[in-house]
Length: 133
Image (cartoon, rainbow, N blue to C red; front, side, top):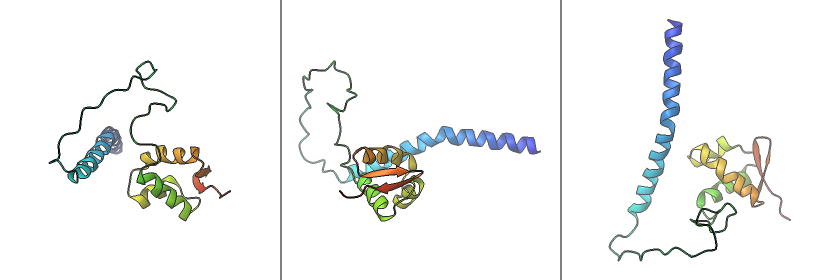
């Protein structure tokens, strides 16, 4: 009986690992739909975008030049994470995620960016604000 239970437990854990990315995608799409609900669709459509004739090979650039999307650090999530670190120095990513009500994996991308910008530093598992100069 124990072998049967161990096998079923293992099967369920594997299935959970398979479903996790789909759940994350669901939440991202749900947030996108909610964001679009506030967009006025009665105005005229936006003009088509033109590609710039940059001096690159046409592929994505690794150095940050020609980066698409909004500038790094312009989102509210980064500001919320920074506020959490300032409010509780030594806070961990799981604690920040719980406080913000978001998945931890997002913060594993956000906090290193804040560190690179010189706003926070990591000591052990905790994050600390940089002292003002």
